[in-house]
Image (tube, rainbow, N blue to C red; front, side):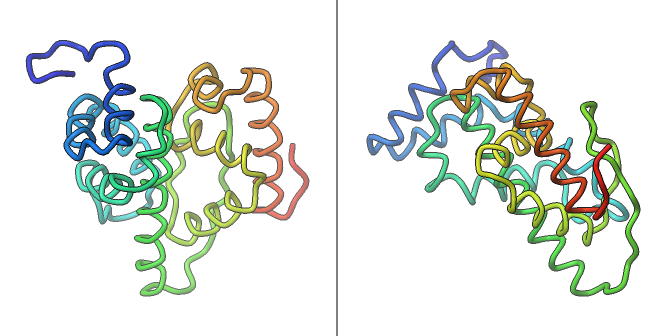
Length: 193
């Protein structure tokens, strides 16, 4: 949304991303206000999964993720959806770093079994579970990892993921099913249902 409450013009984020790649240093700063509400939704979704006392708020997660991507990976984004996928991955990295820090202070917490389902994943995660999930996601095939990051962490729909990754919706569904099964086995050392 613009400051006046009007939605951004179609393609405005894409235009600004191209300008940023072309050397316009201010373009990236003009993108964030256009998609800030979307970034907060992604941050809130990810923070809902944390178990126990929250060490971060959505605003700080958005800001830390922005610092990770503002001059690096975000410059490679082709459009709004791709930028949000990159931001979701950066948020995941921020939360994993935070979980590592918290976990080093608290060794020995137990696991609670959770399921990666098609619906919004509402389970709360301990720092150890976040770290285990991160390691399992990193072991996925690259495209499956991107699908999981977009869907699970970014909250994107199949259509958005397909457009962002340049694949078909059928491929998105197939990768999601394979990734869920692999993650289940990796996390629980048991056959997937």
